[in-house]
Length: 280
Image (tube, rainbow, N blue to C red):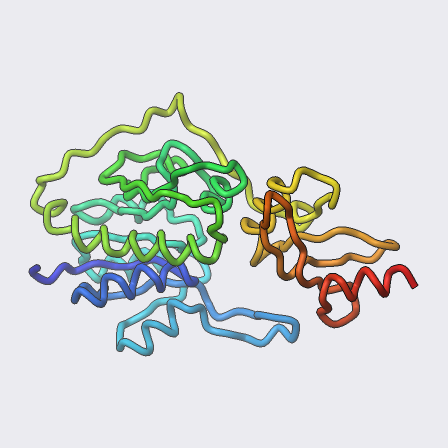
């Protein structure tokens, strides 16, 4: 495949999975636009975003604007990119920038659009108990997850996937699909498909309280929540007004079986030991 001059917008692990998949096939961006370094973790240490670390490792230029303002747009415009690719950037890209490249701005969205528009399309099918999810590569327009579809691919679900596992699988596949379709896209060989906006469904940003469960609830419901929220906000219940996080669990014989918990202010402990201590 001939060299494509493109700018990649991305920040976290989602971006890195796609970058790695493309890079392994010889497709590397001319510039990575990513978030500024920021505080991370309990000690709030100033840390570079994963996409910047990837850029440094692979000798790729990067740019970390606080905002996509006129100055930032001017700098990006100087790249004279054929196309922009957006994967997990996490910031609003203004219409003035979206419309710059000749071959548009493409986005990798981890659902079968128009289903599950919004910020949590990986958690949503886990919570819904869906048997299939997928990847959509779409043209970004001025509305959210609204643009025409370039390509879609389904991915079957077993009912045991967790959010981190699906994140890696789907964004890696998104990078592979980009590498596969970009030559035909630039050659004008791909016809886009308008989304059926009447069928659109929407996801919401997760809040910490989403992780609270009732141990007496349906076991399948709690198993879905455990898998969907395993990274954040994690599932938890309250005992004696103290939060208890469930850190390990299995689904055995149609039962939600807790293995380990992390009581507030204490160390992780086996579930059976926790129950014994709670009786004393």
